[in-house]
Image (cartoon, rainbow, N blue to C red; front, side, top):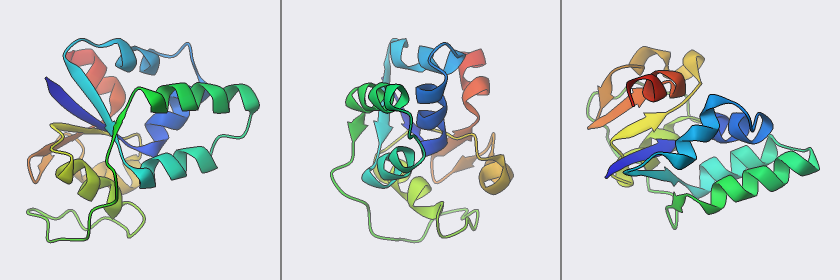
Length: 131
């Protein structure tokens, strides 16, 4: 089973646009969607409409969530992410994710399509195209 870690922006987009292709992530066979408390808190801060909040919580309920944030550690091939994004990559690594999905091309752009510490970093659309 493929383990796919979701950045907060993926959760937010899926909650705000329930008819988008992103929603299909939750129905893929042989995929386990992952998150972390840090990612969930960020997603919750960025969704305010009541109907979107309800959708976000349903999406979160379907994730396997790390019980706590991992301590910082040295990352092989460290992409030197900003402090606010580093916990996302650390959590994906600790969760043994095969893939980290993010829409953050500003900060993760340098590692998109590549592998960092055994985690492939991808845009959600690209991941869905190859699935």
